[in-house]
Length: 77
Image (tube, rainbow, N blue to C red; front, side, top):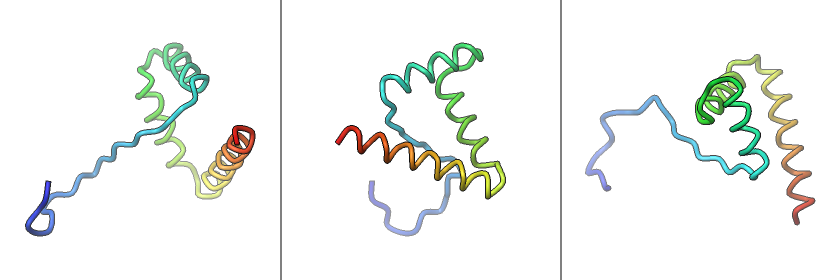
């Protein structure tokens, strides 16, 4: 859809799509079930929690996740 001018409304929400391995998806489903949540609710809570941690904690967690992903992709390549 094209707009003729600047947008007049901005959304404060964001939708995110992530790709999980089958093992990660199973783990997410299992943990969500254990907590009585839907998987998307658990994922949303996990992201919200990560984003509300102190900056140093967030940076350390982000580095750890990126490093683990690099190792995984190296093994798959």
